[in-house]
Image 1: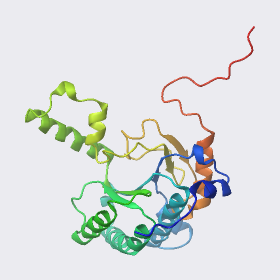
Image 2 (image 1 turned 180 degrees about the horizontal axis):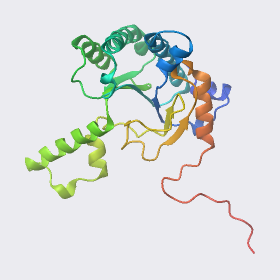
Image 3 (image 1 turned 90 degrees about the horizontal axis):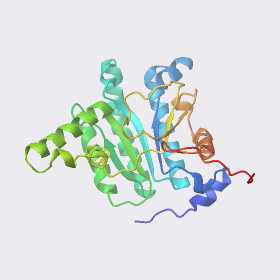
Length: 260
C-alpha cells in the first residue's frame, strides 16, 4: 500500500499543538445534528448529512496529527426509538458513508473497526462494515472505531455473560477474573482506553457511552453542534487537554519550594 507521507509532529506544531501532549485515543459523542438542522430551518435528516461531513473532516485531521485512535458514537442502542423514516435515512447514510470513505481510509492507512451489537442492522450495512474491516485490518495508521447500535451497559452485560460461560465450562475460575480480563472481554478488547472524551451540543452527560473505558478520561464539552465541529474545534479540545494534569487517582504534582 502507498501510504501518504506527512510529518504529524510538524503539522501539530503548525496549529499550535505540542506533539508530546496529544492524547493517544479521542472518543467523541457526536450530538446536535437535529438541533443544528432546526436552527437552519432544515429537516433533521439534513443535519445528519452535514454531520457525516464533520466525521470526514475530523478523521482526516486526526490522521494528520498522528493520533492513535478515534472512536465516534454514531448510533446508540436507544436511537432505534426515533421515527422509522429517520432510522431508514440513517441506515442509508451509513451505507453511503462506508462506501464513499473506503478509498480514503485505504489511502490514509486507517484501520477501520466497529463496536456494538449487530442485531437489527440491515444486511447491506453489515456487508459494508465487514468489507471495510477486512480491507483495513493490517493498516497501521489511525484506528477509526465507529460505535453503531452501541450501549455501554449492554456491552458490559455481554462481557459478563461471556465470562460466566467460561466459568461454567471450567475454562476459567472466578478468582481469575480481574479488571484486565473484563477489559479484554468488552467490545473494545485490545484497544487503549480513551484519554479524551469530547461531547458536542453542550450536554453534560455521557449517554451510556464507554462507561468502563472512560474511567480516567478527560472530558471536554462544547456548545457547538456536531455539524459545526471541525479541525479548529478539535484543536481547541486538544489544547485544553494538553494543559490538564492527569492524576489517575493520585495527588497533584507540586513544585517543591525552597528548604526552610
